[in-house]
Image (cartoon, rainbow over all chains, first blue to last red; front, side, top):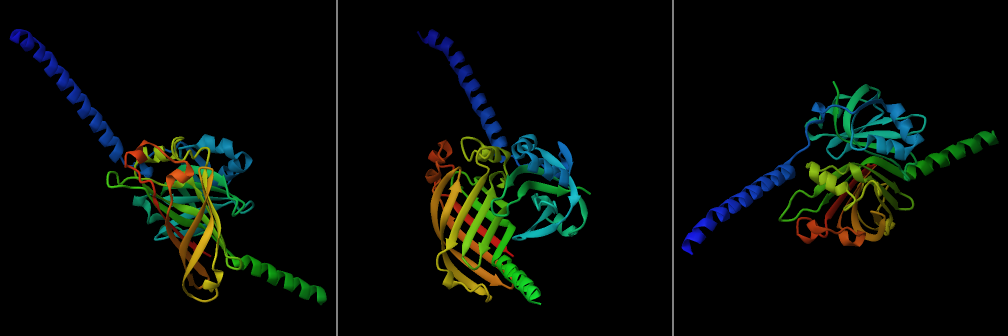
Length: 154
Length: 181
């Protein structure tokens, strides 16, 4: 009997080690995913490069189609700054279609928060950001397209 | 001459009406659903549309759900996913309400005023009554409106294992700040 038990022990030990290894690996993966931060938008490749007015017109033509097309994409938008708007201690940059009054509005990534201060209304700029969504605002009665984690292209 | 006076009157009245409504596209909404187990469920949205009518006291807010920004990609995905806010189906949070004690604030005089508000908050297609105090600061032609309150996620049909497991609080704190011009 003791010899049979001795024969079983190596298998038990191997199973325990394997389970422990799996737990360690899964824990490591979970820790990595849970503590991951977004990479710098400046270093990310843009999925699309668009002109601000043409971009707005896509949403005015078919909001759902445009939202599906650009969902979760990194987009470079070229256009004219219509307004720099304060959001607490930070600044958002807006581009507007002067005909429809529809707007694109960019919030900036933490490491790029000072960049809106380097531009003014009327400047031609290129901004890369993470597309959020385009909605029709019942309050303003225009299309508003949101970007987050943006950075100025220089 | 009469037509000219009439024209000037119409322009003056129209300008007056427009001056009563103040708006911003950069209001901020912050929510904090963190717990002692997990301090990550918190985010802010800095492109919230807000409007106030200084004559009637009406208030309105509109937030694009996908523009709530998290620091962690996994949390960003979960927040917008079908099990949570389902932002593809419900792209905005909205609020429509009023200052219930309008006489407590003088929009023509600089100062800090405490008011009460009541309205309807709609999240994930579910509308709930929201009553909360707010602070109105009048400075020049600007109005700063700030409110802090909590909501019950279950009231909006938002449930799930992270809430049951204590990683997301059942009643997140919300801070709203809007500088309207």
